[in-house]
Amino acid sequence: MTLALGLDPGTATTGYGLVRQHSDGALEAVHFGVILTPKDLPAPERLDLLYRALLQLLETYRPQTAAVEKLFFQKNISTAITVGQARGVLLLALAQNGLEVAEYTPNEVKQAVAGYGSADKRQVQEMVRVLLALPEIPKPDDAADALAIAICHLNTNRY
Image (cartoon, rainbow, N blue to C red; front, side, top):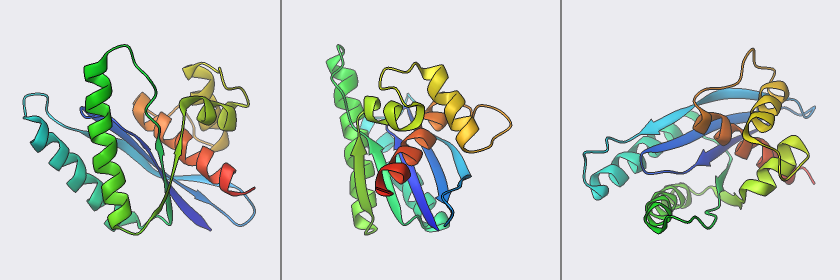
């Protein structure tokens, strides 16, 4: 059995999803949610909150592997910079905990989960629900995205 952590980085909201792959290949959602940081805090304090929250998740669940969504070009450069800062904090925490980390583009995640690199958000979320045998689509969207990243990683590592 392998426990993978998927992360959908952001400064205000970072999604996380822990997915266990059983020896028969079946996938199970272990825990998912979001790490929120208050918008009124200065950036260094928000990044510190994100870092400490991730360390707590790592200590509690002890995943064997992790995957983080790659930053793709955005029109809003300031958004790209803040997401890049959050990614850096996440990658640092994962590396400090000795985890092997993979990075996937949004299209790679869509391809691995929905079978189509241009799938829309709803299609990916529905496939996450089906693959994890959940009664409903995980909420919020950032958590569903993080579960998709974990699924992508587990499916990619199988081959």
